[in-house]
Length: 159
Image 1 (cartoon, rainbow, N blue to C red):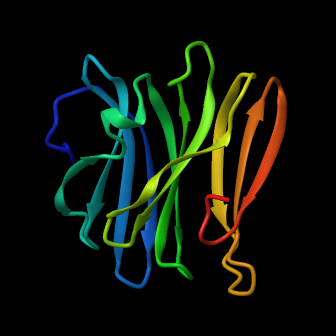
Image 2 (spheres, rainbow, N blue to C red):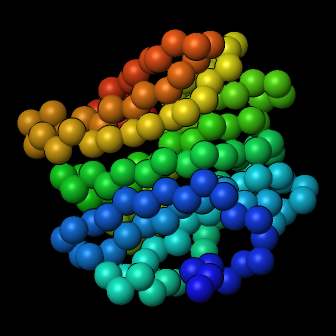
Image 3 (cartoon, helix red, strand yellow):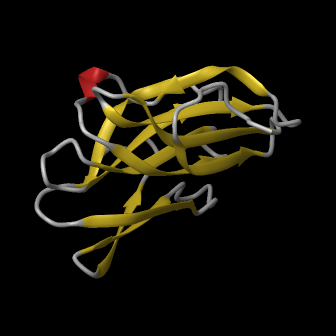
Protein backbone atom coordinates (compact mmCIF):
# COMPACT_ATOMS: atom_id res chain seq x y z
CA UNK A 1 0.00 0.00 0.00
CA UNK A 2 1.47 3.33 -1.04
CA UNK A 3 1.64 5.92 1.71
CA UNK A 4 2.24 8.94 -0.52
CA UNK A 5 0.26 10.33 -3.45
CA UNK A 6 3.21 11.12 -5.69
CA UNK A 7 4.42 8.63 -8.29
CA UNK A 8 8.01 9.91 -8.32
CA UNK A 9 10.99 7.89 -7.14
CA UNK A 10 10.92 8.20 -3.33
CA UNK A 11 14.00 7.20 -1.32
CA UNK A 12 15.66 7.32 2.08
CA UNK A 13 12.64 7.65 4.41
CA UNK A 14 13.20 8.97 7.93
CA UNK A 15 10.70 9.23 10.79
CA UNK A 16 10.42 11.06 14.10
CA UNK A 17 7.56 10.62 16.55
CA UNK A 18 5.93 13.19 18.83
CA UNK A 19 4.68 11.05 21.72
CA UNK A 20 2.58 13.87 23.20
CA UNK A 21 0.43 14.29 20.08
CA UNK A 22 0.87 10.80 18.65
CA UNK A 23 1.90 12.34 15.33
CA UNK A 24 4.92 11.40 13.23
CA UNK A 25 6.89 13.43 10.72
CA UNK A 26 8.03 11.51 7.64
CA UNK A 27 10.88 12.93 5.56
CA UNK A 28 12.29 11.54 2.29
CA UNK A 29 14.00 12.59 -0.91
CA UNK A 30 12.47 12.21 -4.36
CA UNK A 31 12.99 13.27 -7.94
CA UNK A 32 9.62 14.73 -8.93
CA UNK A 33 11.22 17.98 -10.15
CA UNK A 34 13.63 17.28 -13.02
CA UNK A 35 15.02 20.84 -12.87
CA UNK A 36 15.80 20.96 -9.14
CA UNK A 37 16.94 17.33 -8.85
CA UNK A 38 16.41 15.21 -5.73
CA UNK A 39 14.56 17.32 -3.21
CA UNK A 40 13.43 16.75 0.39
CA UNK A 41 9.77 16.42 1.28
CA UNK A 42 7.93 16.06 4.58
CA UNK A 43 4.52 14.67 5.48
CA UNK A 44 2.84 14.70 8.88
CA UNK A 45 1.12 11.47 9.85
CA UNK A 46 -1.58 10.90 12.48
CA UNK A 47 -1.35 8.25 15.19
CA UNK A 48 -3.11 5.88 12.74
CA UNK A 49 -0.52 6.83 10.05
CA UNK A 50 -3.07 8.72 7.96
CA UNK A 51 -1.57 11.75 6.17
CA UNK A 52 -2.28 15.12 7.79
CA UNK A 53 -2.36 17.85 5.16
CA UNK A 54 -0.28 17.49 2.03
CA UNK A 55 3.29 16.54 1.19
CA UNK A 56 5.47 19.64 1.46
CA UNK A 57 8.85 20.45 -0.03
CA UNK A 58 11.28 21.14 2.82
CA UNK A 59 13.15 23.71 0.72
CA UNK A 60 12.29 26.08 -2.10
CA UNK A 61 14.13 27.14 -5.24
CA UNK A 62 15.37 30.15 -3.23
CA UNK A 63 17.35 27.70 -1.06
CA UNK A 64 19.43 26.76 -4.11
CA UNK A 65 19.50 24.01 -6.67
CA UNK A 66 21.30 20.71 -6.50
CA UNK A 67 20.33 17.47 -4.87
CA UNK A 68 19.40 17.07 -1.23
CA UNK A 69 19.25 13.50 -0.02
CA UNK A 70 19.51 11.09 2.90
CA UNK A 71 17.33 13.05 5.35
CA UNK A 72 17.35 12.32 9.07
CA UNK A 73 14.81 13.70 11.52
CA UNK A 74 14.48 13.87 15.31
CA UNK A 75 11.75 15.31 17.53
CA UNK A 76 12.84 17.63 20.34
CA UNK A 77 10.08 17.15 22.93
CA UNK A 78 11.40 19.99 25.09
CA UNK A 79 11.31 22.65 22.34
CA UNK A 80 8.32 20.88 20.66
CA UNK A 81 10.02 20.92 17.25
CA UNK A 82 11.49 18.63 14.64
CA UNK A 83 15.10 18.96 13.50
CA UNK A 84 15.96 17.62 10.04
CA UNK A 85 19.40 17.13 8.57
CA UNK A 86 20.56 15.95 5.15
CA UNK A 87 23.39 15.77 2.66
CA UNK A 88 23.24 18.76 0.32
CA UNK A 89 24.78 19.00 -3.17
CA UNK A 90 23.97 22.71 -3.78
CA UNK A 91 27.66 23.55 -4.10
CA UNK A 92 29.09 21.86 -7.23
CA UNK A 93 31.20 18.79 -6.47
CA UNK A 94 30.76 19.11 -2.69
CA UNK A 95 28.59 17.24 -0.24
CA UNK A 96 27.69 19.41 2.72
CA UNK A 97 25.55 18.78 5.79
CA UNK A 98 22.60 21.11 6.32
CA UNK A 99 19.77 21.21 8.84
CA UNK A 100 16.37 22.88 9.25
CA UNK A 101 13.74 23.13 11.97
CA UNK A 102 9.97 22.55 11.85
CA UNK A 103 7.31 23.16 14.50
CA UNK A 104 5.37 20.22 15.88
CA UNK A 105 2.63 21.15 13.39
CA UNK A 106 5.13 20.98 10.50
CA UNK A 107 5.62 24.71 9.82
CA UNK A 108 9.12 25.92 8.92
CA UNK A 109 11.17 27.69 11.60
CA UNK A 110 13.60 29.84 9.64
CA UNK A 111 15.52 28.46 6.67
CA UNK A 112 18.19 25.85 6.20
CA UNK A 113 21.54 26.32 7.90
CA UNK A 114 24.95 24.80 7.27
CA UNK A 115 26.19 22.31 9.83
CA UNK A 116 29.33 21.20 7.97
CA UNK A 117 30.41 23.03 4.84
CA UNK A 118 33.52 23.83 2.90
CA UNK A 119 35.85 21.35 1.26
CA UNK A 120 35.45 17.66 1.97
CA UNK A 121 33.24 14.71 1.16
CA UNK A 122 30.52 14.32 3.78
CA UNK A 123 28.12 11.42 4.12
CA UNK A 124 26.00 9.47 6.56
CA UNK A 125 24.56 12.24 8.75
CA UNK A 126 22.72 11.05 11.88
CA UNK A 127 20.94 13.07 14.57
CA UNK A 128 19.58 12.37 18.06
CA UNK A 129 18.08 14.52 20.81
CA UNK A 130 19.57 14.25 24.29
CA UNK A 131 16.25 14.84 26.07
CA UNK A 132 17.90 16.69 28.95
CA UNK A 133 15.83 19.79 29.86
CA UNK A 134 18.91 21.43 31.39
CA UNK A 135 20.87 21.38 28.13
CA UNK A 136 18.25 20.73 25.41
CA UNK A 137 20.96 19.58 22.97
CA UNK A 138 20.77 17.57 19.79
CA UNK A 139 23.82 15.67 18.63
CA UNK A 140 24.65 15.51 14.93
CA UNK A 141 27.21 13.04 13.54
CA UNK A 142 28.57 12.64 10.02
CA UNK A 143 31.53 11.15 8.24
CA UNK A 144 34.00 13.33 6.36
CA UNK A 145 36.91 12.00 4.32
CA UNK A 146 36.78 8.71 6.24
CA UNK A 147 36.57 10.18 9.77
CA UNK A 148 33.60 10.77 12.10
CA UNK A 149 32.73 14.31 13.20
CA UNK A 150 30.15 15.70 15.60
CA UNK A 151 28.41 18.95 16.37
CA UNK A 152 26.17 19.71 19.31
CA UNK A 153 23.18 21.83 18.36
CA UNK A 154 21.70 23.89 21.19
CA UNK A 155 18.06 24.86 21.41
CA UNK A 156 17.33 27.84 19.22
CA UNK A 157 20.07 27.03 16.70
CA UNK A 158 21.48 27.88 14.25
CA UNK A 159 24.40 29.38 16.08
